[in-house]
Image (cartoon, rainbow, N blue to C red; front, top):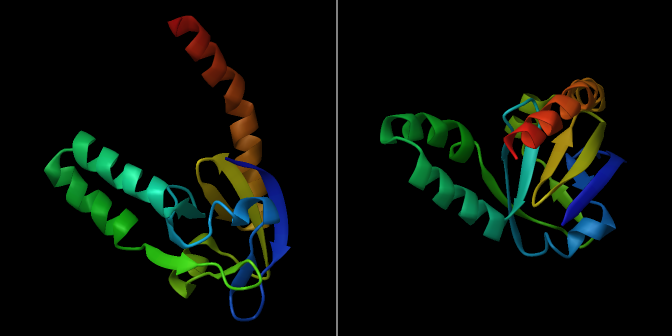
Length: 141
């Protein structure tokens, strides 16, 4: 399980250390792709496969082609180096506007990587919406 928020430097080769707490679960192959917002999403390969299966089962074929182009067409298979870093692919770094610093956010079964300024804005927006979301869940019970 991935929890918390961490800020790290990105080196001049685009390598980003992952929090030590995350490294064991992300050992071996991991998948990175564009997020729905301007971030990079990191999945353990098992979670990636679950996502692929779930999307294929729930989305109409015409819409699946579009989704495949964005989600899977922009995905990269990576692994941690000996120092617990991933080399962020340049197209994803540009998409997410990742420069010299990045915020890594644990979101239960996956991780997001954000530009710190964009994360600050997204986090504020999420904090404003969370109570409405929780109230709507309570109303459904």
